[in-house]
Amino acid sequence: MKILVTGGAGFIGSAVVRQAIRAGHAVVNLDALTYAACLENVAEVAGSPAYAFEQADIRDRAALDRVFADHRPDAVMHLAAESHVDRSIDGPGDFIQTNIDGTYNMLEAARSYWQAQGRPEGFRFHHISTDEVFGSLPADRSVKFTEDTPYDPRSPYSASKAASDHLVRAWHETYGLPVVLTNCSNNYGPYHFPEKLIPVIILNALAGAPLPIYGDGSNIRDWLYVEDHAGALLLVVEKGEVGRSYNIGGENERTNLELVRTLCAILDTQRPKPAGSYADQITFVTDRPGHDARYAIDPSRIRAELGWQPSVTVEEGLEKTVQWYLDNEAWWRPLQERHGVGRRLGVKA
Image (cartoon, rainbow, N blue to C red):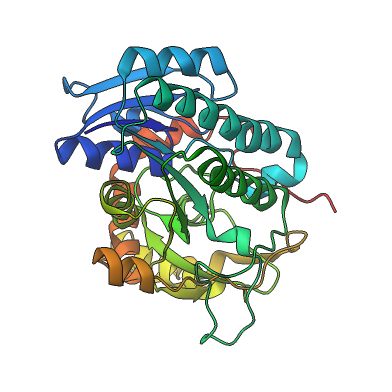
């Protein structure tokens, strides 16, 4: 299968690219190379004859039409998006233009190509989204997001992703475009851009800087190791039912405070401080505006229909992640110089 992956130089997209090439697929990586992209993420497969790279913006319809015509993919995995909630609070316009307008352009380019090819039954447009479109859950851990949970986005980021989900479903219902959708929980793992919680904590800890936790640290997230997520995404594009959505979660709920303390304990073992614990650096900061209390995904559908389940617990995945950052300073150090990285964003009310 030849797969067009948008956002393939980003965190999740690059994991998909690496796994797809290892699995024997051909991949066309389309990425605009915005601030959070890094081609080093796919360096291990970039020399493969099955890999091609196209620098293009999903807001540029003409460029998308050219890429489809030149490469003739069998499937699209659409991951390109602005994804940082804090940045969406400060500058929502980029999220509207990329996540909504860009998805519209992708859908129209894919539809035009699919129709020109005679509407092949095997073609797939896989739209990758987030659990944040569902809003916030109560503390009761028996309640989780399912594929039937009503949408209730609370941030500019989640609202833009909710809108893109609706567009994908509409293009299926109205035009018959063969789509599949997935909504995932919080990802973590190697190559995570250093503005997100887990890499921020690891790198601040190593630098002797404060470990910032929003509010009282009671917000709960369901953590999904990025390599597990990439495997699930490839499974869905290959075997998922057309028109169906699948929730992908790690079944690893932790409060932010629990997560940070776990990271500190791992660092205490893997890179001990001369005295004390990294947990001594924990600092509570003013909460994010509209901060959702809890996310948790019920992955029963993808487990029952496609046989997928996560391969690691959050503790196992975090140990792998910490070790990767310890071993790859040459990757993350230059990224810390990029715009906005390392300073607090999203404080506008």
